[in-house]
Length: 215
Image (cartoon, rainbow, N blue to C red):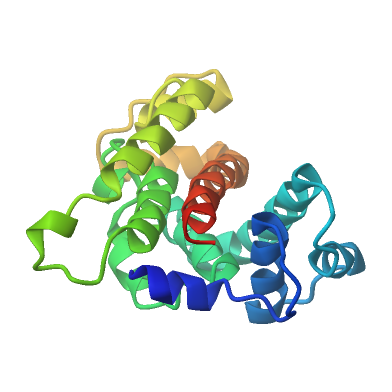
């Protein structure tokens, strides 16, 4: 995604100079197709609001998106990506189909879907549209490494089976699709939204760094 496109997506509706966080919130409440609470609208219309409050409002929007889309998609990969896609107006709906196979990497207990979805969103923001220009390749690698490091600090690993053990306190044998049936029976998936929310919060902070560099 080119810097010009990112600037267009994050363009504020007012002519006053906005700080980077109010800048993002304005983009959020004008691009989302969901009803936002009054406090978010107020926060988005006051450029002088504290950065911490703006982050909290952004996280609240992301949490609402996760709660909305997890019951629809049923996967951490699709839900995490779509929350970022909506909040930052990435206009990348078609990626949802491709991410359907990423929970645990084809339900093998490998990379957590929330990690895969967030890394996809980060790459869309950081990478240049000129995909054949070698000099512009890999712009998302360092921010993606940062994301994985922070996720690991929270859950001890980026692997689905390890994250499950971290949040449930129980070790499951998750190595093939059939093993996931037991997770469903024991209500393990009820922990997924909280993991997704934490993941998209981390990803959003990293995307905000990019927005600051072009503001």
